[in-house]
Image 1: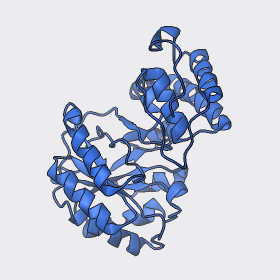
Image 2: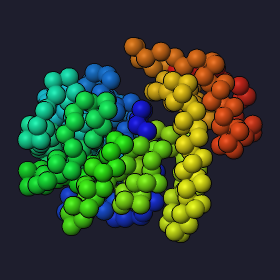
Image 3: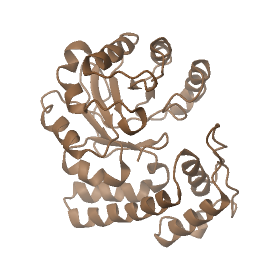
Image 4: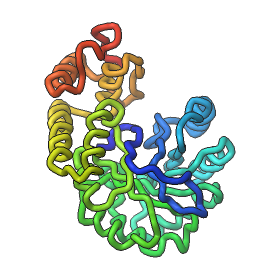
Length: 300
């Protein structure tokens, strides 16, 4: 589920990211606030700079530099390289869309060339971009045109496409990061090497337990954890779930005010926050002692 910027849940330790070594690592963090380029490039660049010292404690930081304009993406990619990012990720432009594989690759190639020393990842999320080019098709020969290409974040429910990506690209050692939280276990079975999602900000413990069970080959236990996660996601989706609601839940769980969303998004309602809190407790995701300073106002 990739309705909001999220953190990576990783389960395989690997060497640091490098263009030379390839994308064997799955420990990355997507930069907050910039998933879909919902603010001006100068502001996004300032966010990178301000939060970079905070991110120094992380193993690796992959900054999303996608934008509607090629020039903006290139400038953000250059800035990411200047401040020491470990990699960059790019979403397809979604207003004037690339309708063919070659056009999309040409766009990605120009962005990657702006930061030639950084590993490059494509962010595949057709439900939001409307770009329906299959990831399997895109990967065919992509490293010949983009030498720094290291993998993709796959945020789609088409497990046939995902499976073919993994099956047909085993020799390249690409990273396949899955972005549909409620289907993560299925992706693990098919060879996913990591995951990036919004719910890991507040369902991380259960997700890590699922990953540990999977590593132990206890598929029955892993399935139970996945079903438990699905129960919560299914519940909030029926209430209406997006970036605003994700911020409200993160505020609830962490006690850190996440702030309101930008228009046209609206604050999550108090009714939603109360319902989500009750569901978290009923599923043992959240105890009363986990709440910071008691009841919190819906802040997003």
